[in-house]
Structure formats: structure tokens, C-alpha cells
Length: 461
Ligand code: SF4
Image (cartoon, rainbow, N blue to C red; front, side, top):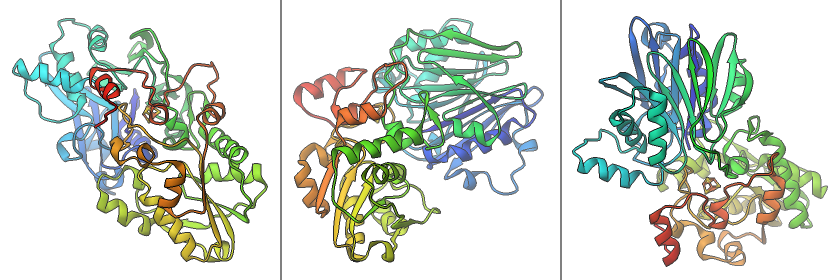
């Protein structure tokens, strides 16, 4: 997952984009960057690997380094391409039509095929991202209007994309017809703001206007904001945004994430009840669902694990060595809450099982009498191809183990998952359209040749 943020028509555009990225940091911690446009100095950019506070240090001068009234920014974790410096975004290019900056959240499912095709025509790539494929396609299209070129490119690309594109004249926000990932519009005085999540609008005190609709292009220029259809919408928003990814204080797909996550916990308590003394969430991923579980079950809720907030979230860090180290670094049990108690441990998902095993052991070592693991989503059995960094199928413990086997692997007394029906009921969309829940069901809303062959052979990379 990545986070994108842009602002048009504000004298402190880059500084506000920095604040926006700070708020979207949970969506990616590997690299970040900002490109700003000034009518006298043109485009300027500042990018780097690491968190926003690493890349934009205390004395960074936004006025001199990133001047201008328009800016776009990006926080990244890698789902397509490696996590090195060359893949930082926004990508800024100069071509015969001028300068173009692009920031992308999501994952194209046919980027390799497009890259191969462009490569055979002699094109050279300087990154390994799918975003650069989009830029090459845009640059080669014959239409004069960027908006029309985007429409043409949308005929070729498949998958999940929220794009911000900035030229010397305009800022464009584009959301794929499936609307996999959130993208919202806000207003700050006379300026327009675009963000992956509403929490970034709140932080800069911008007013939420509306979502960028699935299949919509929003064009912002000196004449104001204009909306165009990219492709007919076919919404299948990502249910995992509610389960794990988005911040609880954001409004996503028309509902506040906190409310939905708490309902996931309540539904979990109804489906998987257990006699216990205390509900302990795995912070932060299981906290809100844990509150819901405690409310519904009547079992007291306590923060029995303390998290060190100065370390990033395990799920999106790129190597196994960091991940194993991370659990010990991040969580510590509160013995007075746990010792001698029957503990319900609530988390959002079990991916490989290694982290859950360590946390269950940590709770037992702190003196728990029993540990009952409860998961506020169904077993994660399939990989995501649309921009969320789930691992290959063979690494997903649920793809090869039954619930009882996983219970034994992670060392809990009992293990209960929320059902698919229960998850969809808790997450219900206001307009009744269907979610993407492919990582739980294997029912992929956007098919592509590599997926079809794997589904036929029951093989996944
Ligand atoms: S496969 Fe899962 S994580 Fe990926 S977009 Fe669909 S629901 Fe979200």
C-alpha cells in the first residue's frame, strides 16, 4: 500500500503536503517524496528512502527547496519493484510536452506484459515500478490533452490505481473503475486537496468534500475543479482497508473505519464466544476490534500489551529478519493484566503465523492461564495483486493449514476467525455494492492471464 497527497493553489503547498504525508505514514514507510511546482522555478523535488521525518529533516526549508503553490507527495512501501532509492515517488520526468510528476497508490496486474512490450520497442526504464509504465504510455500517446491521454492509457492498464499527476497547468486525480483504494477530495480555503485518507485532511484542517469516485478523473486548474469519467465504474473496494490498513479516524468508502472495525469485533464475539477474564488486543492492529469484542461479550477490556510506537508496523517492513526482530522490539506484556487470567487475544489477521506464535508465547510467559486467539477477519488464504503487501500463497499459513492446525502452530488454547459473511455484514457498503475480499475468498474482481492460469492449476507464485 502507498499513500498519496496533493494540493493545488496554496502558497505553502509543499509544507502542507509534508504534513499530509506525515499523517499517511501508516500506508508506507520505505520511502517518500514531494514534487512542487512554481511558476517561476518550474518543478522541484525532494525524495528519499525512510520515513517522512528521515527524508524531511528538522531544518528542511520548504520555501526555498520546494517552492510553489501546487505539490504532490507519496509515501511508499514496495509491492511492485524493490524498495531502493530509484523507486521513490513521485516520479518526475521531462518530455517534449513539458514536465510531469506522478504519484501512484495501487498495483497494476498487467504491468509486466506492458513493460515487456515497451521494452521490445526499445524503451529504457529507470525504475522497476509499474508507475513508470504508465508514464511511458502517457508520453507515447498522440493526444494533445493529458486528460484524453489518461483515458487512452486506462484502456491498456488493469488493476488498482489511484494516481496524482501534476503539470505546470493542472493537477489530476484518477481512480480506477474498481475503486480498490480510497482517494478523497478536500478544500482548504480556496485550495483543493487530494488525499488517500481523510485523516490527512483533518490534520491540515481541510474540509472533506467527497470521494474521487471509482472510474473518475478530477482535473484541478486555474478555472477550478472539473470531473470527467475515466471508465464506467465497477466498484469493488478493498475490504482490507477496513480490517487493517486505513487509520481508524479516517472515513473510507463512506464509513468511519473505527465504527466498522469495532463492529467487526462485535460480530467476532457473536460468532466465536469464549469464557475468559480479559480481552487483550494486539496493538494497534487489533485494538478497535478488541473494544468491539469486549463490548459484545461483556468481558473487561485491557491493554495487556504495550506497544513501542517508535518502531514501524511489522506487516509492511520488507525482510524476515526485521520482522522477527520487530515483535520483541514492539510489544511488551503488562503482567498485572495477564498473570493468572484467561485471556482473549484479538488481532486483525494471521499472515504467516510466526508473529502470532511469538505474541501468544509472550502472553503465556507473562503468566496467562489460557490464551484464546480471535481474529477479526476470515483466514487470509490468497495473495493480493492489487497493491496490498500480502506474501506469496505458500507463505500464507491459512492456505495450507486448517484452523485447528493453525491453533496448534501458534500455541493458543483456541482459535476463532470471523466468517466471510460476518465480515461483509459488519463492513456493509452504504450503496450495497460488493467488496473485493479476494485475499480471503480467492474471488478476484479483476482477472488477468497470469492469475487465470494459476487459478486453473491451483498455483500461485
Ligand atoms: S485482495 Fe484483499 S488486500 Fe487485495 S484489494 Fe482485495 S481485499 Fe484488498
